[in-house]
Image (cartoon, rainbow, N blue to C red; front, side, top):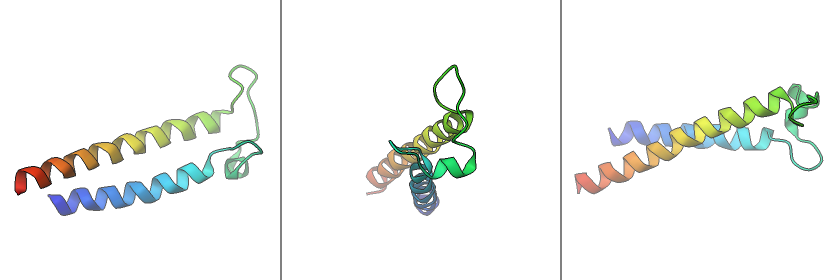
Length: 78
């Protein structure tokens, strides 16, 4: 079980790194390559940027839950 959660943490860490790099900073980012440059008039940010935010938060929550589960497994196992 510890091995499975460790693999999930490593995979989520790599995905989070890529997702954070895709986010737009002050002067634009890699997300502009994938349609992030088209802005909507309502929210000030594009649909692609909002979806990227949602995906990043979701992967971050999975990463956090896996870290907590690993900590509990290590504590209960020893």
